[in-house]
Image 1 (cartoon, rainbow, N blue to C red):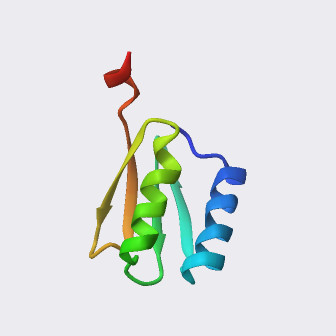
Image 2 (cartoon, rainbow, N blue to C red):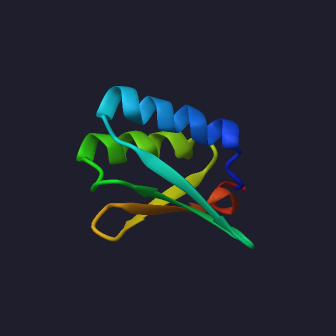
Length: 78
């Protein structure tokens, strides 16, 4: 899944408003990843997982929960 800027900005606003968390969007040739200024709280991580699950995306967290990437799992439901 390619996250659009609009989808990212929606997620960013929700995380700022509900969890006081600031995230950033990073893109390279064929991938995207996201980072946070501080480790993501448990409730923020759950929200992020739920947010992307509607597109059959699994979220993997790294770097002490300050970095996350998406893994497409849609083929598991075909």
